[in-house]
Length: 193
Image 1 (cartoon, rainbow, N blue to C red):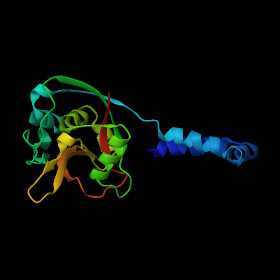
Image 2 (spheres, helix red, strand yellow):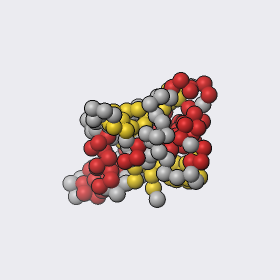
Image 3 (tube, rainbow, N blue to C red):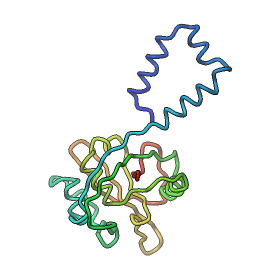
Image 4 (spheres, rainbow, N blue to C red):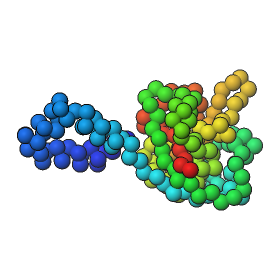
């Protein structure tokens, strides 16, 4: 995802080029190279080192992540039974947020990302990420954890997944509809090995 600062920097760079340099840059001979360069730019991502202690249990991780002033912003349907952690050890992972495609559901995003080899993060990783990197969570509409172990199916068949948000001093840990269409302002939490 290109940020405003990156876009301004690129526009500034283009503004500094001479007419001849711009013509060479955008010439039909150079278009394949320019397209490859721009595609490579979109592949650059920032990894966020995140550490969380699963022995605390899911609810303590979430409470720590939202802080004592925001405990009312935790969805009461989020329970350790519905969203079990993968172990009891201290996890150190590199995480990043991958944007949804416009009008994409979490169901489709999960299929797309796992087919591309991505590892989807779970509720524990989302709590650790919210605690360690609230400023990154704040950049997104919501950040969702959509791994297999982070899906809760209610009677009737609707599926919900944990999601986090930061708005100023407020932090939220809620549930999002797995089949709701989202846009690129929302993100999926992804882990690297």
